[in-house]
Length: 91
Image (cartoon, rainbow, N blue to C red):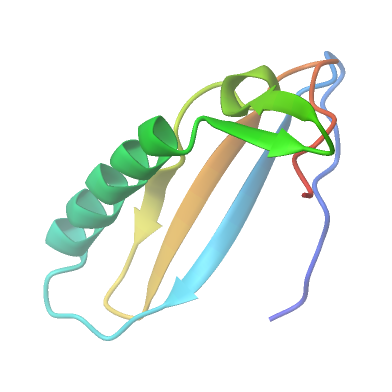
């Protein structure tokens, strides 16, 4: 799968999609479980330290990542970046 960095929208926001290869007979249920885990992970890891600077996940991102698309072979995790503020998203 080709890697493409997100293009910024006119307002400076962006959308990053991560494709995960899966093998499931219940793609919808798997997407619900992954999205739930991502919400919990985001809340637990919202703040982190970067060279003595405290960063907030929600300064760069509009919300927790979600499973946007799903099939029996792929789950697409979508992350929405905030306009103008997103600085650390690659880290």
